[in-house]
Image (cartoon, rainbow, N blue to C red):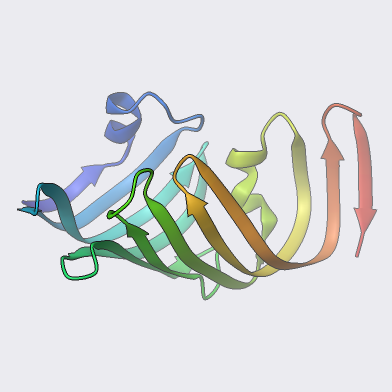
Length: 169
C-alpha cells in the first residue's frame, strides 16, 4: 500500500488507547506479509511534522521489517529535522515467545525535553530543559524496562502535584 499525505490524526480516531493527541502526515509504503502463522507489516515511512498534543516534534524516517529466520520484528527510526537532534532508535521485538520480548536502543543529542511533554502531562510541566540520552528498552510487551542515562541542563519545571517550580542545571 502506497501512502501519500496520510493525516496522523486518523490513528487517534481508530486507536483510542492513546493518551495524547497525534498529528502530522506520513508518506511511504506498507507491505503486509505472513509467514509461519505470523502476520506482520514491513513499513517504509516518512513522518512529516509529527505533532504530540499540539506540539510539533519534527520529521522522522521509520523502517520496519520481519526477519523470519530470527522471528524478530525489526525497527529503525531516525529524526531528520525538528526538536530531537540526532535521534536514532533501533532494535527488535521477538515474536517467538509470549509475551513478545523487546530489545531497542534509543539515543539523541541535546534536545528540548518539552518534546516529551505529551507523555508527562499531569505529572510534570516543562518550561525549559535540554536533554541528551542513551537508553535501552527491554523486557516483554507487558513489562517494559527503560534503562539508560540522561544528561539534563538548564531545567525549569513544575511538579504538578506539588505545584512547585524547580530550576537547576
